[in-house]
Image (tube, rainbow, N blue to C red):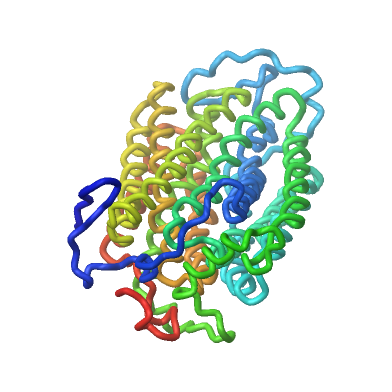
Length: 497
């Protein structure tokens, strides 16, 4: 591993052979970067952050609303059945009992919570292909808008029956399934290689922000209004985002009406040795047999098993095991994602600093961040299962587990752009298809294993998540790479190797 040493004033040098290089060749002679402040690329990153905020708010609000949609609470809002003693809570306003409640058993709840992902998986690969062929702006925008529309229909669907609610959630997933592949395809045109970690972590941190805001705010809405307003309010927020996205975003720097010429040249010249977009040919055979891609697939699948387990079932765990009321539930369920978002952003800054200023190889940075972001959550999610009714330790360990997971945002999560930027959207569609499977089956398996809601049952759920996470971390460390693959360019000799 090359050492980062300082010689002379404001100069960094490193002793390394050419054969060790695995960063893009444009590091030498890279055009001068334009300021981040008021730039179009960082404007896109912030608006993308808002978009993922909406996407994840619409995805997770049902997890909190579900607690209030079930006919198993007493008048004060505390759960009537929990392993640990219920916590005291102020009496709920009388007008918040106007919404319907339902007698769904544990299995039905698991299917409802997991149904989103059955639609989500269908549009991953098509989303990457369509974004590359026709542009990502409208595909991503209309995808989230579709999710918004079906979110607004959720209360009606729930009244009609669990089957209708499952159908609506599947349709929401279909709309939202294009978001990550389309966003990766757009960043292939917008993100200079040495700014990828920063730009993408800012954009994708919107997912954590959406979770952080949606969980406690949904709980407050349930407490003071009723659960139906959870879907109406977040639906309106999504419509506002779509209007801004439609007016302010362009597919590429070349078509952006307000970008400065200096920034446009900086972005396009820094990417001209990586992008290969001539023709419609896609090397499917090479893509599907690429071991670096399968390393990302395994890591993404493994990480998401733990992530989706907490994302969909943490409010249930807080209610059924730890005995928190609906008002406390949302705030405590959001705590893990505050640290996740913060570490994702800070990790992005650190990752690009290590690559650009200390000349650590891209593959070293990606693997190191993935190891920390996968092994750490595995350790602490298992530890959380042994805290019993020690509420402080349980919440602390679950928060640390999810917080450390944010570090993978600069690990395998953006490795698609390192190995094949021209096909990043398609690659993300492939890896996210496999990574969606935990969201489909995880809640169902977890609820099947926790029918009695005992601490021992939840320990089993946490052990399964941790074991899968550890396997993914090891697999990615062995097979992951950080260079543009020969099949991703017409002329493989134009890149550092």
